[in-house]
Amino acid sequence: MLSVEWEIEGLQTVGIVVIVCASLKLLHLLGLIDFSEDSVEDELELATVRYRPEGLQQLEAQTRFTKKELQIFYRGFKNECPSGIVNEETFKEIYSQFFPQGDSTTYAHFLFNAFDTDHNGSVSFEDFVSGLSILLRGSVQEKLNWAFNLYDINKDGYITKEEMLDIMKAIYDMMGKCTYPALKDEAPRQHVEIFFQKMDKNKDGVVTIDEFIDCCQNDENIMRSMQLFENVI
Image (cartoon, rainbow, N blue to C red; front, side, top):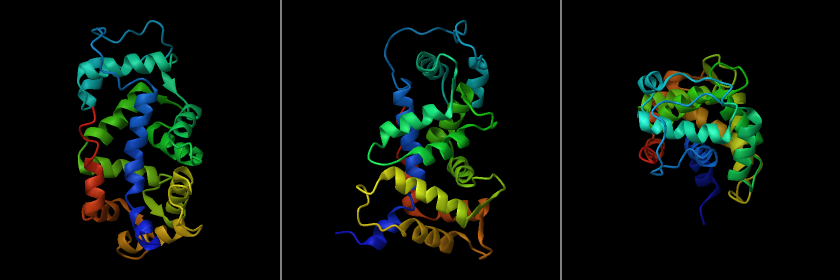
C-alpha cells in the first residue's frame, strides 16, 4: 500500500493536472468537443447571441486554435450558453458532475476567477478559448504562469501559505476522501509545508512567479503532467 507520505507528495502535481482535466470536462459538457463532419458557418453566426465575440480572424491570431476549431467551439458554446457567457454557477454545476464523490464548489470558484481575466463575473467565449489555448497548446512557461495566477488568489504577485492552503483544501474536498482515504485532515497543511520547503527559495514566507516556475520546471512529475493533454484536440 502506498504510504501517506507518498500520497502527500503525489498531490503536488494534482493541482496542475486537475486544471487541465477539469477544463476538458468543461469542454465536453458544453458540447465543445464534438468534431463531427457537419458543416459549420464560415464566420461566427451572432444574430441570436446577446454577447458578441470578436471575429474569427482576431481570435485565431490570439490563440493557437485554427479557424475550423474556433467555429466548432463556438457552435457548441452558443448551443449550451445562448447568452454567450458562462457564469460561476455554471462552472460549479459542471464540476459537481465531474467530481460527484467530493465537493468541488470552492475549486470551481478559484478556477472560474482564473478564466475570468477581466473580473466582471462572467467568462466570455474569448476568455474561455484564450485560457484553453494556454492550457492545451501553450508553452511550459505560459502554462505555469496560468497556474501561478490560479494559486495567487488575491493577484498580488505572490503565493502565500494561506492561499496555497485554500487551494489544497479545495482540491482535497473536490477529490473526496474516497479518492485519498489514507490522508488525514491535516494532509492539505502538510502539503503546503512541503510546497514551501521546495519553492520558497529565499525563505521569506511567500512564493514568487520566478520561484514557482523554476521549481516546477525542475520537477519531472509536474513536467510530465503538463504534457499529457497537449494532443487531446
